[in-house]
Length: 405
Image 1: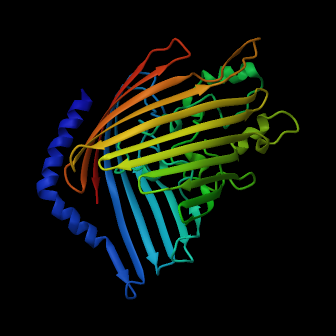
Image 2: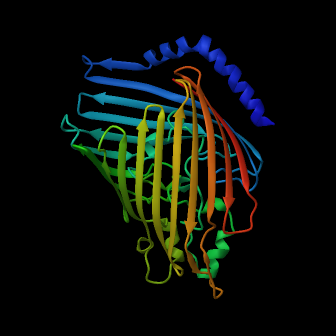
Image 3: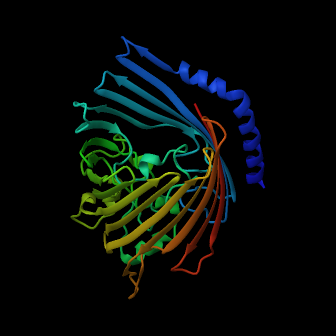
């Protein structure tokens, strides 16, 4: 099986890296760091190389785009961090891969993030940021990159496609359910990954509280093509916010909210007469909590979301996950995550009321090993079950080898 072949390759390469390449990567890190004007200007170029191998049952789960049962995905991610004095910071992230989500398509190069951040005061009470960057909602986004995420994939709420179509409004309730049976890549999750939409944010920390609010050009459910301001402007902006409370070093609590138009501009021609695509919103409330004690880390998020759907009405969903990570040794860790998403009933256009998407649950089990400070291997098994339809269960095996420089 390709997955086992890739795993064997990763183990061999990892051991080589551990003994022969670590010094080279340390020298490369130093070479990619520069400073000028007596350290008033500092810049650093870094990155990761990620080799992923997936084996799954059809249809492909979540946002994986492949007609084959096996998918090999290679990704190069580059990060630029620049500091001008103590107040001004700039960062950018570029990727070369086969699509924002794992796919069988050809390679492309994207600029996923770029932002300018200004912090007027030393105590961090206020920061303003402008550009294209990840959302402030929830607690998964700050640890979503391959090196920090103990899993290969994202929690269910960030990648499970629902019956929402942001490009075409349904002509009727019956049409809404008919479109749900179509291509899943025309559909949207509640939150699309880290949601690198464009906009402006403010954030800061006041004692035990931290706050963040942002105005973005597209909703949390919007697809990656919508995140660039040249694709979707600010005619109907999305507003997101999070308020956090950290009573001590172990606990962190957060409340999030979002309100934004989820339809793309081209959907306007399919709307009922006299209606604008900004009239139909995605409304979201979220709660998150994290805990850390010695070698144990726990995270949880809960989301209540509503989509206002033309000709259908309000479609509600509730999604949550619990996640635990334990470090057995400084190099070896294990993680487990339980996810579930539930949908309310709406009129199906045929005289009945049915869930507007399929309820489902998923368990993710992962193990990771850091061979050096630059190389990491993760293995994962996921089992997904749809609980409101007689469909087949889905088993997914995944491996991810990461080199950080």
